[in-house]
Length: 416
Image 1 (cartoon, rainbow, N blue to C red):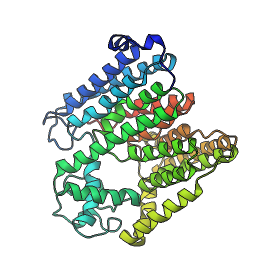
Image 2: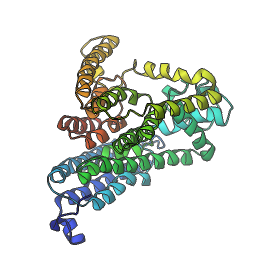
Image 3: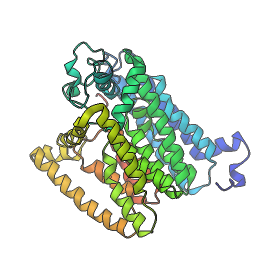
Image 4: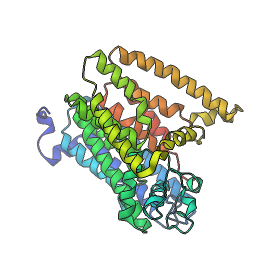
């Protein structure tokens, strides 16, 4: 990294005078305020609380929206003015971990992960075959999402194997189970922030683009979702490839896809770009890692882990209220037709992206945004699919889409 200009040196006083850093401090304080709105037992923002106090939801939403506004405005001076990296990373650490001080936020996913892992760890079953409802006395069952109790897991084998280790550590403690996943997700966000700075030409800007995003902070340290680790592996794969470590890059792609299947859509674009620039593809690393993971999964779950492909595609046949498909169905179009229309639109965009990659530019951020806008199953934490990719690519369209998607998803899952 090049030395900071004199205006960026000079100790805390000059750092505090930087407008972007002041806005970053505002983002941190307002994100903490949003977390505070979830803390009272009367708050409906946590699945662990019985509360129905709607005013706390409005307080949360106001604080989160103001935090996002500070974040978005801060990106303007960061994109135009040299800024030391260390205070940006320090603020990112605060923003991405502050939600750990509060309760589980806006989702029961951490308990769903726990319940499915306990099928194997506590009951000797196969989580790809037996749903958690098979074991009605299990302490995780009542806390997980009711819609998932009768469904076996649809996650990739890497995540399922890892979640068994988590379940063994958590035992029968809901609090420990949730906290372990939330700490892991917050750590993944910090890894993502560091990798973004490592990959990008403008390090401080990229680190803030990822690490100061309050939507990601609230849903990962707050909700403990696994998507942050998926994207950490994707960025790790890109960083390794940029340093000529193609085999390790291929292995990282395998790991990302084996946690959750969606990165497979990004891989053809990366391959086409690499071919255009005559870079090694890392096929050996990908193949070896895939073989090892497949062998471990087959040893543990038999061939049943392959059912996760079907579970994933089945989820895409369901519509959430945030998905653009729901806008089309609200106009009277049958759900299946709406999903098909958006799928066809994504296919057309993807064909254009393949052409761009063939010409030497894999626009991964645009691809991730197109996936989000065309999927029928859209939830707020999926913003992490696009934000890190947009941070490391010099692509204004991707960055605009990342900010727009994050702003749109800010309201999602908030009980009002």
